[in-house]
Length: 140
Image (tube, rainbow, N blue to C red; front, side):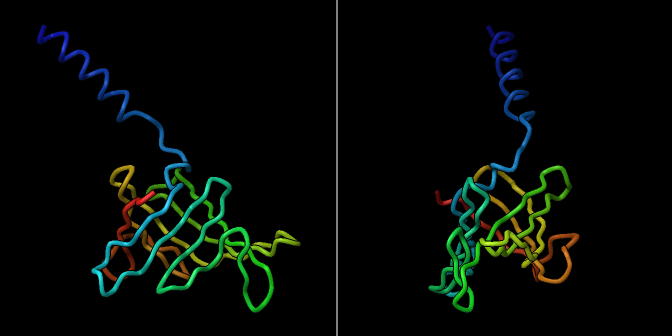
């Protein structure tokens, strides 16, 4: 009986841990884990590739955002083939589909519910440091 249970556990563990991570892992609402007085806000990644950023009562981006009175879209691209994973957040003009990189980031998932992001507007970070990274929990 112990052999059967050990075999079942081994097969189950191998199946769970060998599944390939794809870009859908990021879909959902992720809340920052800073203290209550200094919360960044949240990232909302949708299945259509749009990202909405909510911070300090301000909502930016998404599929129907506005900037300087003109429509914009904020999209994301996650490259799971890189170590650490690379995330680009882009601003796009909906009428021309012209894209401009707004932020470059690296991402690390410790589980389906926890991720760490290091972001820079100029140059993609190469490592996670206390100065450049934040932890997030999936809330939806």
